[in-house]
Image (cartoon, rainbow, N blue to C red):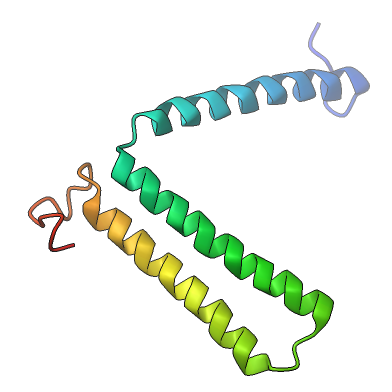
Length: 108
């Protein structure tokens, strides 16, 4: 018997299938990322570092205050800017990207 939409059994069935779907998605993403070249993983780590530094600065500003606001703004924008430039580098260095296939990695 098919559970009715909005019923308790339906919600439990959807929660179980949603958990399995999320696990399958996580597993497929993890196995696909395992095949990523090392140089792209290093760039990914740098992007994560830049974004986490920007988030840390925002949390610090929220807790302590923003007295020298120009200092906060310059630190935040430099983190965001380096993250954007690193993503652009990752796009150009990626060998699977057909748009930059003629561009040597040294030039990127």
